[in-house]
Length: 177
Image (cartoon, rainbow, N blue to C red; front, side):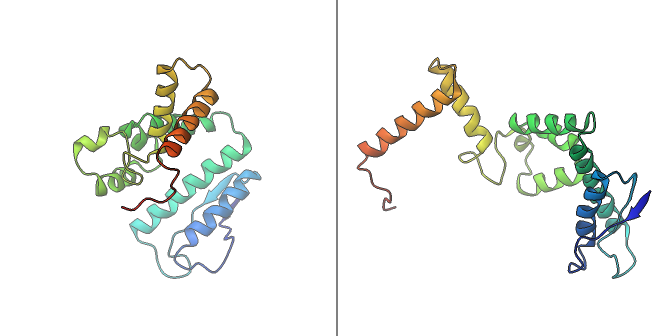
């Protein structure tokens, strides 16, 4: 069977594509065979080309989420590839693996427009010093240089080292700038 929606809440005019996308993921998980997209203009007006695009992308996400929830064979492959591309800072692969490569490139280039940013080992959200993926890579490198095979040991040793630095620095939590 197929269905339009369903909206999981009715208090979000202008965002019905999102509320119905949530519902679509749920009914897709339960076996609905055909999801019919809803646009942001549902109940408000006639959709334009961009509204249709938003609805379709939302439903691509919903359908994929349903496939993941059902454990559909192969559904996880693309997510795993994206996670690996993100961890390795392969920006072009991230764009291309996404459901909407054009939007991903547009958002990325809005804050990091230079071509060199396409090979940066950080994103504009956390920057180079606070990137969780970069920190994870640094921890792995630290473990490798110290000859530590067990990552848990590397973390414990690193925490102990930081604790010594804190104590040696006077154990002050707040420092004046």
